[in-house]
Amino acid sequence: MRRTLLLLSLLFLGACGGKYYRVTDTASGRVYYTRDVDTKRRSGAVDFKDSKSGAKVTLQSSQVEKITEAQYQQGIAK
Image 1 (cartoon, rainbow, N blue to C red):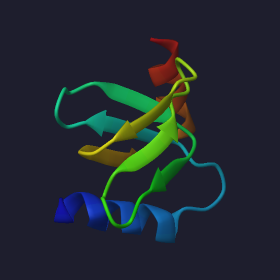
Image 2 (image 1 turned 90 degrees about the horizontal axis):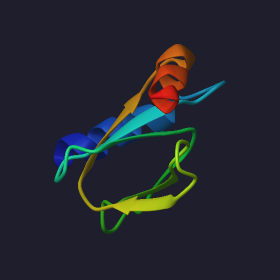
Image 3 (image 1 turned 90 degrees about the vertical axis):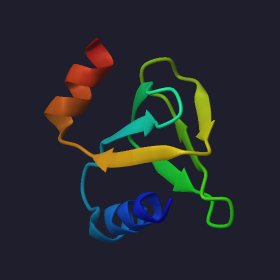
Image 4 (image 1 turned 135 degrees about the vertical axis):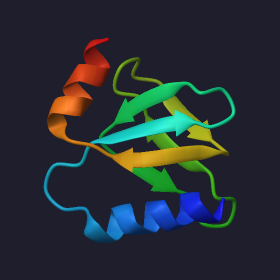
């Protein structure tokens, strides 16, 4: 949990220009790709729109990684 919050903080502080994220649900292992992640500070949950399906997703336990545009394009093409 602390690692996830630290990672999210670093992502938001260092993010500029095009933003691409790979979000992994640590409970199921499912991987999502998105251009925007919203963190709920109190609960630690993350909200985002899955670029592949268009669905709005909320995860209580996740790992968020900033990725390159090429990795993002490859992920949504699968």
